Image (tube, rainbow, N blue to C red; front, side, top):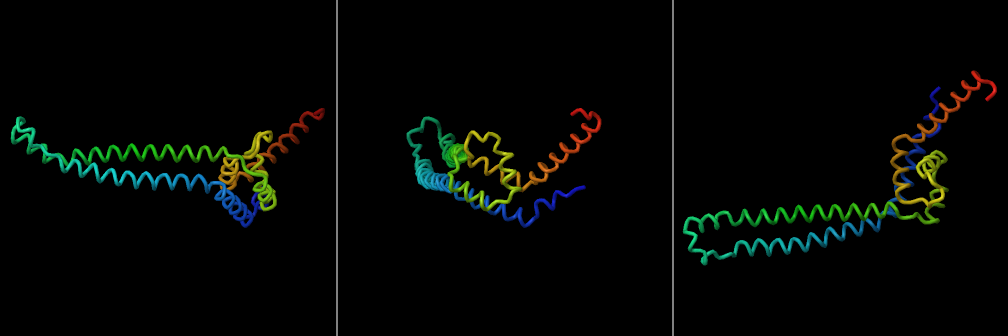
Length: 187
């Protein structure tokens, strides 16, 4: 009694995922551009500062520290590059973490962006009834407009077979209702 696959053929699944991917690509374009530009600008700035920092570290003159002794000054000169490269590595990790947080926040804000009417109209015409059913399942509160996040999650759920699961759940409900009515005819 498993007729779920015939309700959502593979070619329709591929078409629906392609339509949603194209729409999401357009809806995510601004967030992607902002993230990439920010990463490139920060990388260029950090590269310049990194080179200046390393140059500063290698040009340090320890001649004023004769009171420490010749051996201690020799050690300072020997370990000087390691110290500055450690500073560079730590600052680089901090910058990468901050960029990661920035990009994450950009994409989280983008997920909350409301999808315009034209995009929804185009999706309504292009998507199969099965894909629309998944979108309705994800979009739990029709009092609020559809967001980019709803479409993103819909795409993920369509790929993982959500329509078949919804269909199976409906079959379960029907079977249980029939069985319940058979046991208690007053219902």
